[in-house]
Image (cartoon, rainbow over all chains, first blue to last red; front, side, top):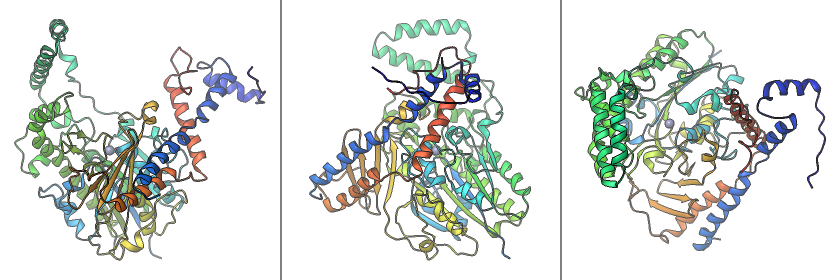
Length: 65
Length: 504
Ligand SMILES: [Zn+2]
């Protein structure tokens, strides 16, 4: 089961966010969830490992590692 | 007290190294720059760090490889130090005048560090009201739809229909009174130089950094008539140029057919370079009249090259990193220095910004990946160098985030050899640039193992280089910028955004 945390934001900040982004999100929780998911994507690590493997395999073929 | 030097950087879109006179091109495309080159440092092998524009400019302005912040980051990150911001912080007045390349816009962060940022795209452009689509009357449209539907039933009739429809559109367009100016979708260099010249004239005594980006050699190729006359082709009319451009741009046309138009297309491209050269000379006259030329460091380069079927391709898509695409001219004029032709070592444009700052005695931001080679250059030397160029293979529209998440294409080049690693299919090919400068014959897979391993080690170092301390912050800021842009683009949309930009 998914656990949830409470986050404290000032009412003023929530009201401003509501006003600005309200038409795109049902709630401030949805906005923050979307934003954090966007920021936490890890594309770099995934690509880096695969690319390192390709170059190192080739260097091994050539007898250089 | 001596006045601090100013800096003018001119970048010309699609400028190939082998199409400028000072690097040996026989056609008179760059008479002005050829003369300037006599008193400048000429880099025979300047190599971009990425191609095309959106993969090249992070290195030119921020001395950062295009994929270093993560391949999904487009442009310069908010607050990321750049050549402009480094100079601005030290008291230089900064201005940019750009001829409307959408990837060099404010949206992609290129205004970072500029007091004045004029992007012609963000301003009102005169609108050509004679669009070809608008002219067809409904009778012909209905007939056309009927013919198309029937022709598409088999491959041969579909090809025949396409040919006829193309000729019909060309005939339709030829009935209009056309001018090169009206056909060109971006402003020519004279407009940008006019803007920059009036800005220069309004400046006081303080040092400045001025960046101009010119689009003249970019397709579609519609050079001003004066430029065609200057290279001896005053006979080319706007309607001929339109026909050649339209023919050159057609999809699904084999190379043999395209070859018919190649020479004429190259002529139009060359005339674009000629116009940029003429206007650069005008810019420098303004600097001279304003008594600023004697204390102005001047650099001109390209953001990438252009292909004319050398390897079967047109334009400058990131599908390969052949020298036609990554080798650009670079000329650096420093007042009081005689200049010279530098050794043939591949000088990556990742080093350009730190080198320029060094010439001006301004320290480079610690985020810059490149290094200053000014101590060597000022002695007419360059050490042994290796240049890395990267892009996302096939990423033709980087404004779509998903397109930026493709596979990396990486080229590592020294003065003699080049290795191209295609991560998409885990292959690498190597060229002997001395014996095969056109890169037509890849060496056998096991040839030159020591040289190949040397370049592959550089590739490994490049793909595994750890992020700098500030990278996560820049990445975060760039992601937030895009997030907000997506929201504001959809401000009037009824559907909720949630889910649309979530991870897949
Ligand atoms: Zn470009």
